[in-house]
Image (cartoon, rainbow, N blue to C red):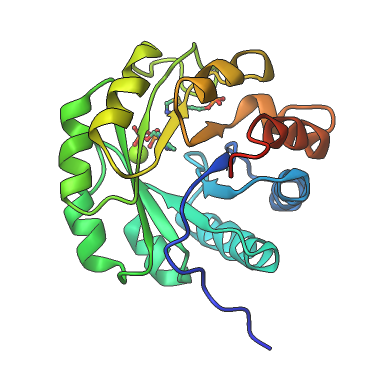
Length: 215
Ligand SMILES: Cc1ncc(COP(=O)(O)OP(=O)(O)O)c(N)n1
Ligand SMILES: Cc1ncsc1CCOP(=O)(O)O
Ligand SMILES: [Mg+2]
């Protein structure tokens, strides 16, 4: 029986952001481990390979995510999301607008938006139909060292104003994740601390445990 696409799944818990990688087998193996440990969303983010390989990797990741009934969100690229029928797209200030993403993707697809340290951007993203907003970087990020720094106190303000889920990103590690969650983030987006872990499944389970009873 064919596995059906996910219907506007809410992003909550551990949201795994894939690292730049040319090694498709390794990328799939690591993502499988993140899913086995309890990852609740996967974002395919790969800034370092050509479009052909991006399409191949994204298609294979989608098959894997469907087996686990977990959504695959494509970073930046609405066309790729449409081509492979991914579960959604994540856009930032240098990408398409939320309105365009919403217009081109079917209603049941997920649209996420980066809002950096800016609540006005988040209010606008929600109006335009975003399914979640992301703030960060809360901590220095090795994956994106130039990311805008953000104070944890923003999360509480965001939760009071917005109805859609709030995602925290940037330099999140096991020893600082609880602070982000306890301040109100519905999900934490993690790349290096998850994908560089010696045992990715165990690391993912440790993150998932931080949300225990809250998903
Ligand atoms: C969940 C999540 N939050 C923020 C980002 C960053 O998006 P953007 O600012 O467009 O930067 P790039 O990731 O494209 O470098 C994200 N990808 N995911
Ligand atoms: C894409 C992005 N946007 C802000 S920080 C970041 C990178 C997140 O990766 P890491 O968890 O390794 O800091
Ligand atoms: Mg982007």
